[in-house]
Image 1 (cartoon, rainbow, N blue to C red):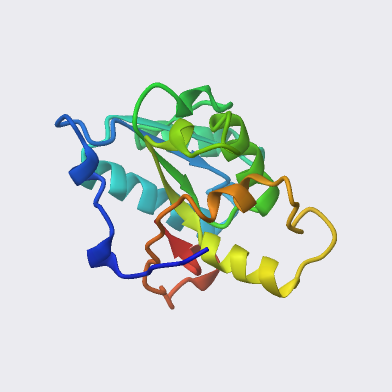
Image 2: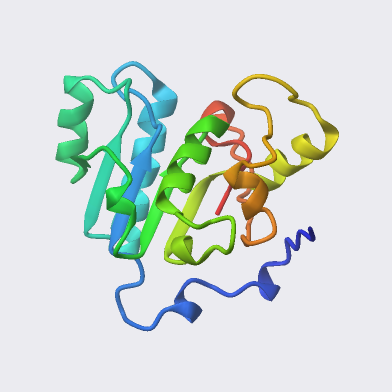
Length: 185
C-alpha cells in the first residue's frame, strides 16, 4: 500500500464530475449533542459553513446523543434528522464524520459500499471528511490496538479501503483539537 500525500498528484472532485452539481448532499454522522458539547457545536458549525460555501442543498445529520434542542438547532441551520445509510446512495455525497469511532466507519462504509472487498465503485460518489485512514493504517501496522472495537480485522472495510482511497490531510486546528485533529478528506 502506497500513501501519496501530494495534493498536486490527486484528482479533484470537480475534475471527476460530469455535471454542475458536484455534491448535492451533505450527511453528518457522529457529531454528538451541540447542546451539551462545545466540540459538537463547532463541528456542526463547520458542516453548515461547508454546505453554505459549497452550495450543498440537501443536509442531514444523525447521532444517538442528539436531544430535542439539537434537532431544533439543526433544523434552523437547514439540517434534517435522517438515520440510516440509504441517504448515502443515488447522489454524490459529502459524508462528514469527524472523530467517529472505527466501528462506526466500518458499519457506515460497509453498508454503503456493498461489494467493497472487490473495488470501491459503490463508494465512488462519496467524499469523506473524517478521521485519517492513514492514521488507522499506521496503528494497524504497528498493532497499537489489538483487541476491542477499535482493533483492525482482516475482513474489515478499512483494510480493503486503504489501497483504494485517496486521502488529503487537513491542517491541524490548535484552537479545538478534540473536535478537529487528525482530519482528512
